[in-house]
Structure formats: structure tokens, C-alpha cells
Length: 256
Image: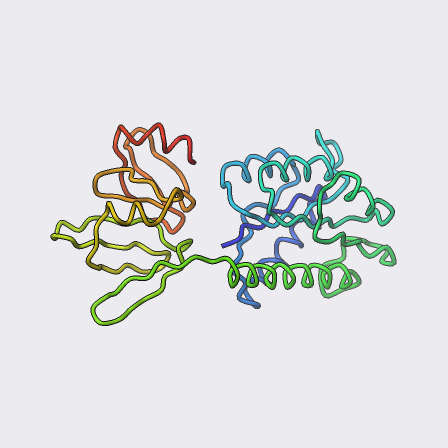
């Protein structure tokens, strides 16, 4: 699920943008969620650094009273998330060329409706042009993601009973030994299945994105949400948890 971040210093417009995006995501069934809406660029940076996932960023250019403007924020986000989608929503039409000068590779530059006496008119009113731009941006992002997944997505093939299944590798949270001889449990984003296999062979076949964190667990490090160092527990993106050994702590910290 792609996290969506909003950085806008005008409180009313920020709330309106968040509400519009949440409803649009729900209506269109996009695999996205509004992760943070804030007027402070430092909060956006901290959230993006903590999550370490490809994201969508709706940024205002002029952030009054803040330590950086939207272009500087975009530069810092690019360092954290080189494949993320930057979308500028601003009243400054003449500054669009700055996205190229800063080498930001912005997806879009949406200008707030200058014709409206109140540029912060709620969606459905005089600022419909701006919201059309946002609709267009999310549609383009979804199309690009679908194309990338079709071209590059890896699948793990496993036989369960008499059925051969192909599971996207990026939807696998971790593998777990079940206590039954040669039986492995695959924990996916939304489901779980048992099959006959070997942890050692899985580790060899799946490559560097998976880490053997415990005798009983092989974890997809790209799906780790957070580490509980005190209890040696890993929380995955889908909310499931598993444990890691003392010996795995150092490598986990390097990967996450």
C-alpha cells in the first residue's frame, strides 16, 4: 500500500486535501492510504524516513514560517525515496520550472485556481480544476505502478495440496517452521498457507531481501514495519509479528 503525504501550511486547505484524497482513494479502490497530513516539512521527513517505503507526496511550494520550502523538502525526500512521486500543489504558476532546476523529477505541478477569489474553496466548488489535477495524478501513478508490477514483479511458486500457487514475493511477510517435519508456513499480506519445504533451500532461493532472523523464521526485510529490541520482536507491515535471535540483531539493524 502506497503511503500518501500532504505538506500544506494552510490549515483549511490541508484538511480539505486530506478529506478529498481519502474519499478518492476509497471510491477508486486505490492501493493507497493517507499516512500523514502536516504543515511542517520536518514531520513529513521523519515519517518518510521511519516508513522507508515508496510514497506519494503532495507538497506546497511556499511553507510560511518553516525551515524549508517545498523544493528543499522535495530534494530531501528524493534522497530518502528515490522512486517516490512528487506532486506540487501551489498558487505559484511561474515557479513550475524550479522543479527542473532542483532536479526533482516531479510527477505534476498543479496550480491552485487563481480565478477563484478564495483559492481554498472546498472541492466541488470553484477550485475543481485543482482537484481534477489531483485525480489525474493518482490515475497516472496507479497506471505506472501496474505497468511496473507487470514487468518486474517476482513470484514465489508453491504447491499446496494439489494446487500450484504463484504468490507475489513482495506480498510475503515471512516463512515459519511449523513444528511438523518439513512443513513450512508462508505468512502473506492477507493469508497463510502450509507447504512441504526446507528453510535452508528457501533462504538460498529467495536471495538478499529475505533474512534468517531466527531458527524458525525467514523474514522479508522489505516488509518490516518496526523492531522491538527489548523483546526481540519484529512487527510486519500487515500487523503480524515474529521473533529474532540475538545473533540476528546487528544484521537486522543494518537492513531496516
